[in-house]
Structures are given as C-alpha cells and as structure tokens.
Image 1 (tube, helix red, strand yellow):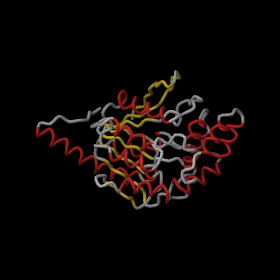
Image 2 (spheres, helix red, strand yellow):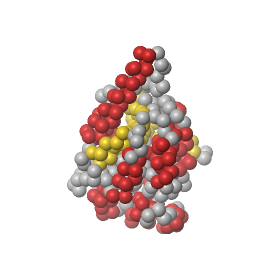
Image 3 (tube, one colour):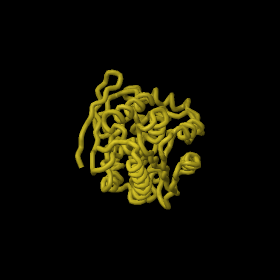
Image 4 (cartoon, helix red, strand yellow):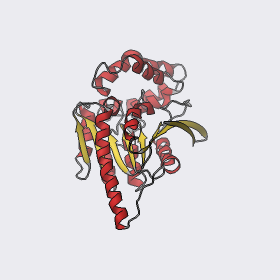
Length: 308
C-alpha cells in the first residue's frame, strides 16, 4: 500500500488531503463516510479485500481526514468541488466508486450530473441527512444556531468537546454505528478519539451532525437523483441499521434497476465492522461489470472507464 497526498484549494485556502493506493487492475475509488470519528482508515479493511482484484484509491474528505484541518466554514459546495477534483485529477473515470454513508449522496449527485464520471456505483449504508435533522424529523433551524455557536472562540470548542467526549462517542457507536457493543474498545477506541481531538476537527464535524453538509433537501431529491444515474448501482446495508436510516436505504433500494443487498449483520459502519460481507457483495457486483466490459471489447465497443 502506498500513501500519497494532494493539495486542493478552496476559497484561497490550500488543503492537504491524504490517500492510499493498493492493488492492480481496474480503478476503484473509495470514499469514506462523513462522521466525527471517520477517516479513510475505516475503509482500509474493505480496500485490502478489493485490492486483490482492483487498483484501489482510498481518499479522505477534507475536514474529516488525518491531515491538518483548517478552520473553514465547510459547506456542500466545497465537497461537491472536492469530489469533482478527485474524479478529474486523482482517479479520472474510475471503473467503480464505493461510497459509504453520507458520501453516497455526493457520489450520486456526481453520477447524475456527469455521466460516466464515477463508474459503477456501490453505496454502502447510504444516507443523505445528518444525525440531528434525522432525529428532529427534518427540522434544521436548531442546527443553524448550533453551528453559529460552534464557530465562537472558546465557546465553540467547549460545545464540541461536550458532544464528542468518550461517553458520548461510546453511546453513539453502540447505538447506531456498530452492531457489536464491544467492537469499539481498546486501540480502536483510542484511534477514534484521536480523530475527534485533532486540531480543527470541530468545524466539519459540527456541520455534518447538524445537517449543514446535507446535499439533498429531502428524500424525494435523494431518490430522484438516483433515478437519473445511468450507471449500474449497488446498495449494501446491514439488517440492524437504525430504523430511520434504514427506511432511506430501503427507499433507494426499491428503485427497480438498483441491485440491493441486505447483510445479516451491521449498522451504519457495516463496511468497517464486517468488511468480508461487504467486500463479497461489492466484488460480485463489480465482476459482473468486468464481464460486461469484456463482452463490449469482443463486440468492438470501446470501454468507458479507465484502469490505474
């Protein structure tokens, strides 16, 4: 596995972002979930399994990754711009894109607005709405007020620490992220706490939690965006996914031409906790796509996606 870095600029601010390359074959781009405890490390177990057949690129989201996080007022336009940069400069026209959690809505929008830009699309426990508006049935006014408080020096960091202290992180993990209540312990827990404690972590985290990074305004937009995607699509989610989130996943999976796999275990971080299950579902889907490409080559059609 090779680690590299890119520098991406947003509103005059140069931001360094890390990524990992592993494997050979058609290119598969991996996009981790948005979360207070997420980095590309959550995708590494899945990456290692996919790398046996594909050239994988696993990249952080700015504001959530392992690199320094500048104090930026993150917004959906920033992440839309970043993904466009990745799909043109880092992993142009990949064979497939695997997007987890909230990253799914950004991958869907990219696929719908720029056909053939993301390749085959694999959405893992896909969501479109942040935790707070999900709990509040879509109401967002309180989230805007929380963000304003979160940007205030001294008061903002205090508010953030109160919401990502060890007790809260454990409750969050057991409640809707991991099926096994004892999965996030020891070294795993220490690594997650280092993520939330990183300098500059609160700006993106608070905005994600409060719904300020939601790209889609409602379920209708989420579903209609998916209907406009021309590429083959797979949705994978765990049977134990939180009730409200699972309803959104099932609504997406109900679109006739989308292939859906409900795994016998797993919550929102099913790809991290059960990478073998997820990798098998993804590889079966992608193998079918490779066979289709081979048939296109035999018939004289040009393949639409590049290899690394």
